Amino acid sequence: MEFGVGWKVNGLIVEGSVDPARLPGRPRDTGETLDIDAVYERPCDYGMAVVGGWTFIADPEFRASFNDDAVLEISDKGRALAWVTNSVSTLHGFAWYVDAVPVRRVVYAEGEVVDESGERLPEEASAPEPLSEDYVFEMIGRLTGKDWGDSANAPYRIWTCTEQVTAED
Image (tube, rainbow, N blue to C red; front, side, top):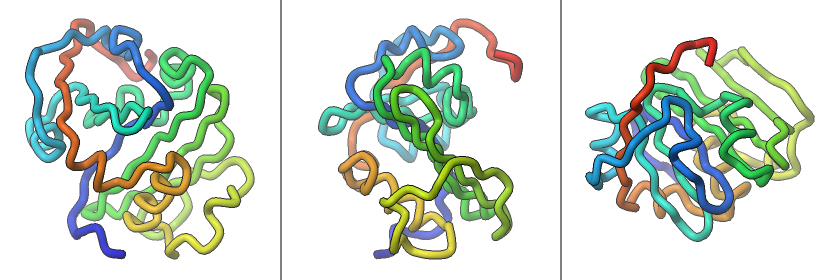
């Protein structure tokens, strides 16, 4: 299945509800709701949508995505999936967390592995190769049970950071 061309999106998907105040940057609710495209076009600090028991966090600035400490802080030790797909720079990957512990991480850039840890997950068997946007969207569905299309069509509540976030945070 093709999901489109030219994706430049990333985020964090957390099982259950998330207290946005626990995200890096101590965001506040702006009262706005946008579609997923607008979240990344603007860009916003965070966009959040709840789809079938999972909280989808659009994270254009990579404040929480692939940030192990942030996942521990917001996931209540449940399951979480950080993901990125940028077909322009050919950067694609995901990190799977169970009980807030990173179990598997794999990131490809320009067709080469640039970050990999943990054993391949059973869900990775027969995923579309090579690791691309199709692979990432397939892993979202296999690991969360939620289709990327459902989350892409959901309304995202917009949150703006009240504190500066640095690389050390």
